[in-house]
Amino acid sequence: MEKYEELLLALRKVIRATDLYSKQLNKTTGLTAPQLLILREIAACPAGITASSVAQNITLSPATVSNVIDRLEHRQLIHRERSTLDKRRVVLTLTAAGQARLADAPRPLQENFIGKFQALADWEQSQLVAAMQRIATMMDAEKLDAAEILEVGSYEQQKFNSR
Image (cartoon, rainbow, N blue to C red):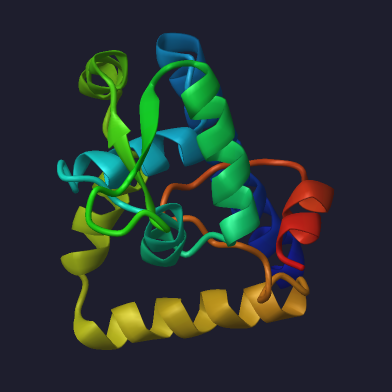
């Protein structure tokens, strides 16, 4: 097997693991990975957080976050409210249903990965980071949204959202 075939096989395995996690997450909780990520971010700020702060904290575009927030609000998992201190600001908080859904959600796929990665020597961590950054560049993916939760989605949708 050629080296590039071995690399592509490994990438397909990562994509497949991510896809399986996303499907299981949706089946068990009815949430997508970005929805879970946003619920976790909102839960981390019980006094409320703005949509722009959520987008900045999880490194997704404001447009992507806004669309997900609309869906979460429609499902009554979050609540939007004007700030009492600054009427120009709208803060997001979890509803009781959102808190329950979050409590039932599984841990993110990458938590196991993070533990194993942090157990590696610094030089090996740096080598993996550099290699993955190069792969992202080779796949013209360096400008795509990069959520903290791994999820497989439509390339065209991610490409559109990164503009």
